[in-house]
Each structure stands twice: as structure tokens, then as C-alpha cells.
Length: 398
Image (cartoon, rainbow, N blue to C red):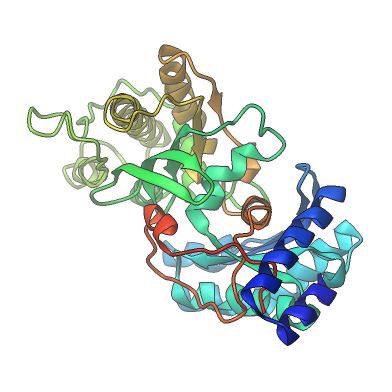
């Protein structure tokens, strides 16, 4: 790769680039590709090395739960400071676990967006510097594409294009028709809060202590844990977008459900100091949110078939909320109704992580979707705009 990059610097003609692309792909076909993925789009600093045959060679992650819990949510400036402190150690840890140096890699993949600008700046700068200094290819990754493709790692024969995808996280809730790498059609999105944001804010209303753990931590998992001890039928919750003028719409909405919990507290409908009351409210909220996800995903299945001509091979559910067992159960039932398998990454790979960035880097790099070392982060970046960005297959990032 380094020799090819130097040759491109000296002889950057179109013909040379095409020849080098062919040679690069031939080289990649003789052994599994090795890609380092770097992630810091929000509050997790993560890096991982994966191979193109679906193996995790090494990974390292630093969470920030204890930094943000006292503030009730993510503070961008604090998150960026933590990324700056821990990014070198996280990258070093992933490479050490893999037994590789940067020069042994075929590409460096880095989250380019969307996300918090101050957090994205850290991983983009780190990835660009590493790749350029060692003459390694650079891949700028869309954070949501990484979530969508994560289920394919080690299971490409099972998760075949096209498939229907639900991305449910703290920053996004959307349904997608996934036609191929770099090719997505947005079907439905949230009109207000994401489902993960609603979980986090309801946890705050109920004053639930965050789960502090290397895997599965934060307010959302804390609410799920509390809900597991509650009665989902004791408190009535309004089903979002269930009126005659919204029931057939493809979008989601969670702000009304979140606001209903706040009104229950403000009107004294439950005792916030009662663990039983809080567990019952949490269970009712969780069940209603999961059923709303199922209802709108059912509409997405129908839309994909009738309007897009897409017969999905499977239903992929990814993003942090995909690790929620109640959500999975509802979407499993929907997948069964549509006679397709439900495919979810392992729970620890549903939340933000370096593995998903590295795997998206593999998927893009082996199609020649490389980026120059001059790329910047993109704060707001609709996923269905990827295919319109004019990517041309490259053999180098110079």
C-alpha cells in the first residue's frame, strides 16, 4: 500500500489510478484485509481492528458515564476533552491487542459524521494523521451506515442485500431500505425525539441511576433494568401517532410519550420515591415505545415492497436501543409475520463502538470507496445522501 501511494504521488494520472486500483484489489484478495476503525462521534472513545473475513483482531473502548451522569446528559465540551485524553491510548490498545502496527494495516476507517462537532473533530484528526503518516488508505465512515452494516460482519451470506433496517439509538430512529453499501433509501424517521433520547429522558424523570459498566451502561439500560421488575399494564400510555391522520404515516414520534411520563409525575399520578411505581411507569413506557417501533416498521415493510419494489431478505435492527430485549421481542414477532429472519448484532456491538467503524471501512474499502486525507467531519449528514456524493473508486488516499 505504501509503495502504491508513493507511485500515485509521482504519477497521478487516471490510467495509473485505474491500474493501481486493479492491483490493490488483487493484493487484497490474497489475504484478509485488516482495517483499524476509530470512533468518537458522541461520548465513547473507541478503536478496533477487524479483518475482512469477519474477525475482531483487537479492540479498546473508554466510556464516559461517570463524567456526564451528574449533568443528566452528554456535555459536548466535556466529551471532547475526554476524547482528547483517551484517543491515543485507545488506538494503541486496539493495535496492541491485534499485535499489529499502523503500517500493517490496509486502511484506517474513521467516523466522519454525523455527531457532535467537537467529538467528531478528534477521531477525524487522529485517523487522518495516522493514515497519512504511514501511507495507509483512509475511509471516512457514516456513523449510521456503520450501524446498518454491522450485522453483516461474519454473516454476509445471511445478511444479503437488499434488506430492511431499523436504526434505533440515542441520536436517530429511522427505517431504511438497504440496497447495497453506499446506497440507502430513507423510509421513515423520527419527527422529534429519537427512541434512545426518550429512554434517557424518562430515566431522568424517574431519577434512575445510570448503569456504569464497560458494556451496556448509561440511562437507557438502567431504565430497561428497572422496567424488567415492573407491570407494563398498570399505567396507561398513549400510543404515538395513532390518530386517523397519523396512523398510516411512516415516521416515528416519541416526544408525546416522554411528555406523558412527565405529566404523570407532575400530577402526582405516581410516587417518584416508590420503586414499585417507578418500575411500573418504566415498564409501561418501554412496552408502548417498543410497540410503536413495531407498528411503524410494519408500515416500512409494506412501503418497501409496494413503493420501492424491495423484497427484504431480512430485518436488521441496530443502534443502542437494539440491545433492548422488549424492543427485540416486538421486532422478532414482526419479522416472523413477514417470514424473514431478524438479525441484530451482539448487544455490545449495538452501541457505538470501533468494530462497526472498522467493518464499514472493510465494506467500503474493498469497493474502492476510499477518501483523500483532506476530508473533514460532517455534523449533519442524511444517510440517503451518501450515493449522491460522487464517490469514485480510488486505490489510494493521496
